[in-house]
Length: 326
Image (cartoon, rainbow, N blue to C red; front, side, top):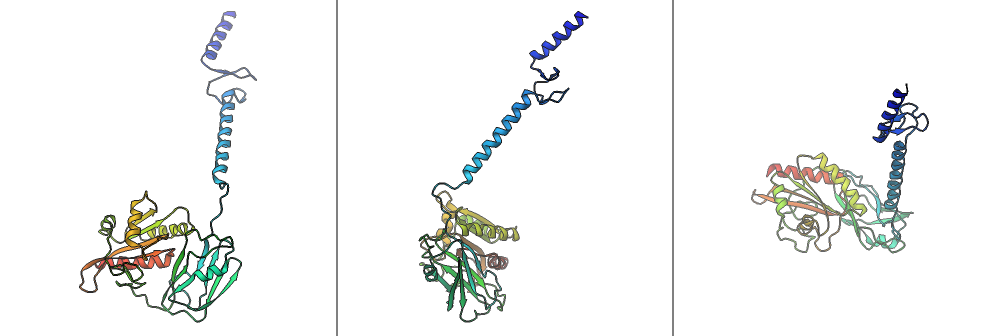
């Protein structure tokens, strides 16, 4: 009996030497990596250690999350435009033009910075952060209007819009669905720089990566920054349009800055007005038939500011139609 007890103790000691853990409650031995006692299920030191480490990691991650999500000292939410209307390709000719800002604005500065092209006479009214421009007469049927809030618009503290300028277009109902053709007007695909550009009438130096993309189909180029509110809006719009025309166009999503040479190429080649580059900027490039002699040429159109989905989709559709014919 004593000999059997001695062997049992030797075996127990051997297991302890191997790292087995003795439960303080029932005395049963468990493997070194066991969370709980195999006999009474009491949590063992290893299990307690794992739980403690896990809790510590959760606390650290939560703390870092709060730290990085909290705005830096002195950070201010930028002044921006929250929403605009209309934005469709079939807006009512009796539509008011509405702009909603994220904070109270210097109303005189906004009204002075507000323009519509073609020119529209109307009356301004305000309700808190919302500007309403009511045209004095109905808009023209089947026309495209471009609304611009220039960089002179400021809030009550004198802060400018986060991207300096906000511009968008809409189309009114009642027009024919005529395809946009090659020309120099605001509603045309351009072979040369348009009338709005300082180098109007001169040819465009298309980047090599755009020429390569045009071998497969039209290209849509989106140049933006990560910070501005209009850029965030345009990111979603371009992503949706790209998904709708997947396989039919090439899409370039470019961040502006010195580390993105293609963005610089896009600004240099396709800025519609030249001079200062405003973002977001959207460019559609395609092949088309020259209306003069029927040869294949490269044409494009671009916008500074937000291009809402109905408008952008209609331009992409026309670009594909031109490319198919070329």
